[in-house]
Length: 159
Image (cartoon, rainbow, N blue to C red; front, side, top):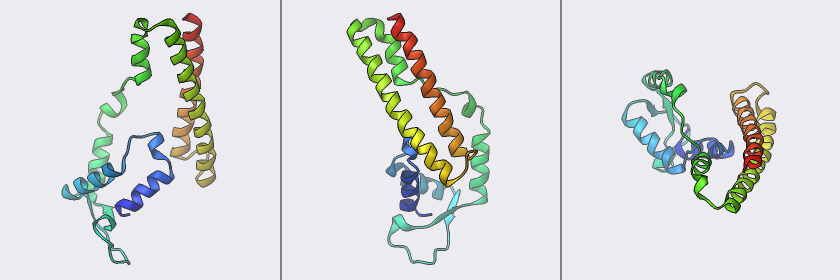
């Protein structure tokens, strides 16, 4: 694929909902991977229509580098706290009405995301299968949001 095609596919699959990938990051990453010899220009039946239309494919070295990176322990061990949890830890300094309002806002956001993810899951299953990697990831996200909603009920009851 070329950069624009890759970005369009990521956008079509709504990857930004699950991973922070921007259009400039796609092009930056392609340039960096090309310079490292981890991707290479692939033969394209159509002539390129500018630098953003150069078609790439992974090299053997690129596949090895990916496999090596994915074997690192930090992929399974690293966690970053969600901004809402950081806020909640500090919420003892907030006014009680603001705590209740923020919990309600978070609950509304979770319901909105659940609706989006349930629709995305149906679309993914229609395109792939119920056991595809994408379907499994979205199902996990749905479960995590449902658990957070139940947890918010506990937090609200305590507050």
